[in-house]
Length: 231
Image: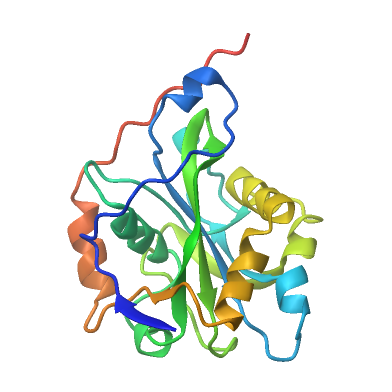
């Protein structure tokens, strides 16, 4: 697999936008990114691609602008900072996945799936949000606590088919799993993993989630536009 390490200041090439709900929304810039983190379970064989395990969390705070409600099941997602590059936004979202205690265990097991990044694939309160796929191939029983522990708490690995049947799921997760079921983002990313192509380690040597999170939190968020008027 690719051994290249990514840091928060990498400039990436933008790709073609995906579906949007209106022509006006299409002109808007993405306000952030959501993460589909999929796990490799060695006991499941082909089920890993047909019904992937997805990391989920529980929201602890309300935020009307991004349609958050306490108690909802969700996935890591983060509003973009002004002038922020793609990888920094992804690392910011990973603060809802892990803290520094887990990074030694994750460093060699968490990969960004190159080419499986959907711009503007999700619409939250009329604002477009990107969707990124990451692949985790480590033990499924390690303890994972988010750095942003006042905002979310881990809810564990859940099969996509079960998520689609659950109540109390945040819109960002509902949309993400429907896009995944329709377009096969995670299944194709896992196939790329199995062929040892297009995988990039997300954490650079010496990376501290705590330090990154604290420095990032003082930066301003991009503007979140008000909901579009319905015709």
